[in-house]
Length: 278
Image 1: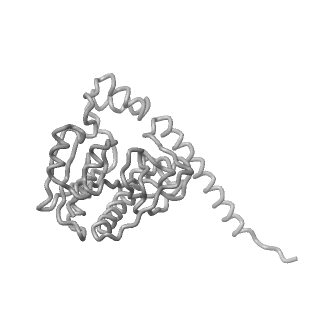
Image 2: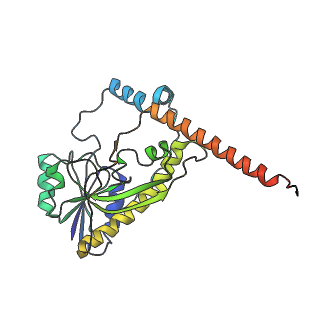
C-alpha cells in the first residue's frame, strides 16, 4: 500500500515516520502545507485582535512586552524533532487545494490518504487517494468533534478523553469510525489547567493516536479493517476556545479542586474520629 500523509506541522512528520515501518505499507509520501494556506497574512491589527480573542488582555500585554523588550514567553517544552526515514518523500505545497498541489498528489497515485493535523480539507483532496482518506482526531465522536482536544472535556468535567480514527467526509469529523479508545482525564488537576491540557495532549493523546493510526492502516492494508457509522445522537462540534472560555475553565477546575479537597478532609476527619461503644 502507498500511503499519502497530509500534515501542517510536526504531527504529520511523526505519523509518516511511524507508517514507514507499519506492516503492509510499501511506500509513504508526506505532503505538507502551512496552516493558513490560501489566506493572506494577518495585518498587525488582525494579529492583535486574534491575540485578544484567544488570550485576553493579559496575553496581549505579554505579546506587546515581548515585542518591545524582548521578553520570552514561557510555554510547553519544544516538540522533539523527528527525522523522516530514508525512502519517505516529502513535498511542500502552498495549499492542499491548489491546482499544482492536486497535480503533484495525483501523480503519486496513492492508495490511502492519512490526515494528521491539517485545516479542513475539501472533497477534491480527500477523495484523491484510491481508498479515500482517514483522519486522526483527538476526541470521542460524535460528542467531541472539532477543535481543542482535551480542553472542552476538562471544561465539561469529563473523566476521559477519546481518540478516534475515522473516514474523512465533507462534514467535519463525521465519517465512519475505524477505531476509538478513551483515556482517563483528571477533572480537577493541580496547577494551571491549560498546562495540564497541553501535557495530556503531548504525553497521552498524540502517542496513542499515532499507535492507533498505525494499527488501522495495517488492518486496511491486510483487508481486515472494520468500520461503523457514527451515532447521530449527541453530536456536537467545538471551536477553538477564546480567553473567556479559558478563564471559565480555570474557575471550574478550581471549584472542583476545592470540592475534592473538602471531601478528602471530611474522610480524614471521619477516620480520625474515635468511636464510642453503646
